[in-house]
Length: 331
Ligand code: GLN
Image (cartoon, rainbow, N blue to C red):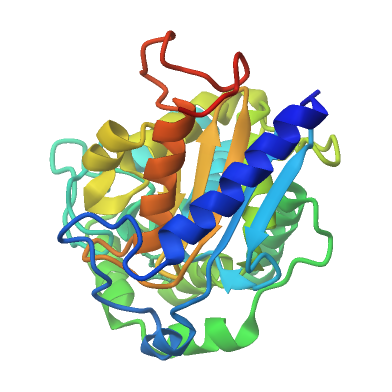
């Protein structure tokens, strides 16, 4: 159990992080300016910022815009991959999609030619294969199974697919369509392309709040069991696979830099969300719509970097340096 004093100290740090990371250009390093918004209309909401953390004991911290809902977009790839593993087993899933970082942008059209499969399930090519592998009689049933599973991760039974976001994506989807047809011609994708895209994009269109995103992270940190509801979202045997792939490939073509600077397995989405997972400790959810050139939230990356350094959270930090759960004092 997180002690009262510790709870307050973390809350104070969160408040401080919010003001540091949202004041002007905040703690952004040179070259970290916002280069885009997705969709472009989100620029009008540039100031939105929400940060939440959920401990594996269920303690939750929130600051900023924690009621704002935003689509998961690429963060959904983590959970779609989890369900593909559960439906097909590790061997069959590995046969169809690898666990190797590609170093390419998320929407790149490149494949692991040696094994004849997409490099990993955190880029679009691999996520489309994972969506293709989720079982169900119809595309609606497959999307519904994913939604149900996402409800377990968040602990929110009312979680929904935002139909407007889904419809918008279904009509502005040329690159994913091209990628899918190419993959089917190469034998990497099977069945109806529109069905696969529907399932993939339906998962991308599930909307969450920053606290819900942090609960999803905490569920992965807590062995696959939601710490708020006690419900299992991912079978134990797939936990390592999901978190390690996320840690190697979760931040697009900035995954290496992230691993070095922040050192917390994480996944981002173009809506400006980042989910962090610190195994055995907690999950993080950040939302701020301004994106860097990789498609990662600029303030989200900044706040995670600062949080990691203040609390010594880097998974490969010298134990002397790691303060969370021991002294729990920032510098
Ligand atoms: N729905 C988006 C797409 O498939 C997700 C992209 C992202 O978040 N990087 O293009």
